[in-house]
Image 1 (cartoon, helix red, strand yellow):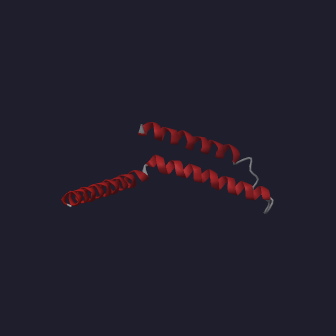
Image 2 (cartoon, one colour; image 1 turned 180 degrees about the horizontal axis):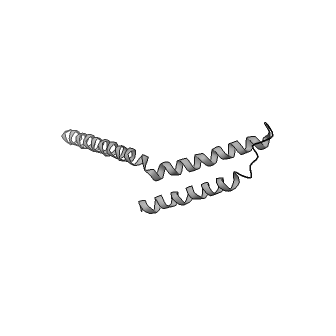
Image 3 (tube, helix red, strand yellow; image 1 turned 135 degrees about the vertical axis):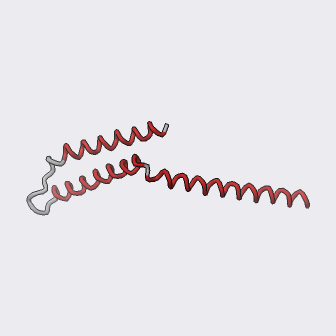
Length: 94
């Protein structure tokens, strides 16, 4: 399932890159400050952010972080289970 999930991100990244490459020659960056220039700059920034986020996921930078978070979750669950077992023993004694 992980491969399919990464495949989806590759497709979305390529689509965003294709849109950027198609639109870049159409955007006007000349003529001084104007609404068209502002729109072009903001649109390019958003396109680069989308591409960067998909590339970040594809490279797998978060996989190590996910493993560490899962280890913390397991440790907390074991701690809570130990506390519940201890509480049950105390209540049985009473």
